[in-house]
Amino acid sequence: QKEVEQDPGPLSVPEGAIVSLNCTYSNSAFQYFMWYRQYSRKGPELLMYTYSSGNKEDGRFTAQVDKSSKYISLFIRDSQPSDSATYLCASMGPGANNLFFGTGTRLTVIP
Amino acid sequence: EAGVAQSPRYKIIEKRQSVAFWCNPISGHATLYWYQQILGQGPKLLIQFQNNGVVDDSQLPKDRFSAERLKGVDSTLKIQPAKLEDSAVYLCASRRAGTANTGELFFGEGSRLTVL
Image 1: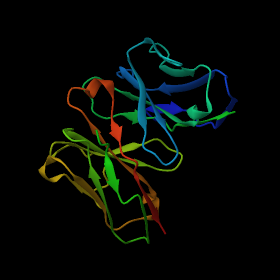
Image 2: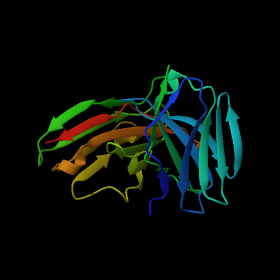
Image 3: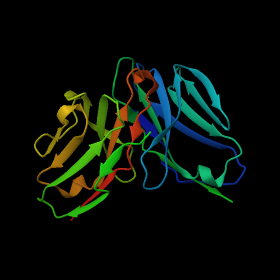
């Protein structure tokens, strides 16, 4: 079983739609959760990170973690064509240095 | 602030040949990582350095991969001999001190390796 599982998509939505991206993880010791965005032929860049359970909002983006179900979500409101990218979820445990990444979900927002 | 620099961006070699990738992290970042990203997958850690010491190389295939970080700045990753399954993007990342719990890594654009 992989540490972090993610639906690879691809996902295609019209501009302005609400996007929901999801991951599950297997290690109950994980406490730190991140979402990275990766544009084509670029390195990933950190979009958001959260600690433990709960929600975190940053502009049009909301990250949600439910530790009871080991579920990680990213919501994008009013999606824009510039949001078209691959979104990678990642997790790590306390005191750990290694991020475990999901496979990434490729998102396309159609104008 | 300059980002993480990597070279070469693209490399095509035949199996059993050798290849080396170079990384220059963001100035002052003591922690440096090499990740392997196979097409359609997420990055997988190969090795982590703290200054010029190895923190974690448990996932590095040591029979063919080697890495070093001399003087705690630049790093090189070498593959010898290469196999077809080594075709991937090799990402270098660095991290600022005190940010371990944010998971914030700064990635370079990667070196894309094709093994024929």
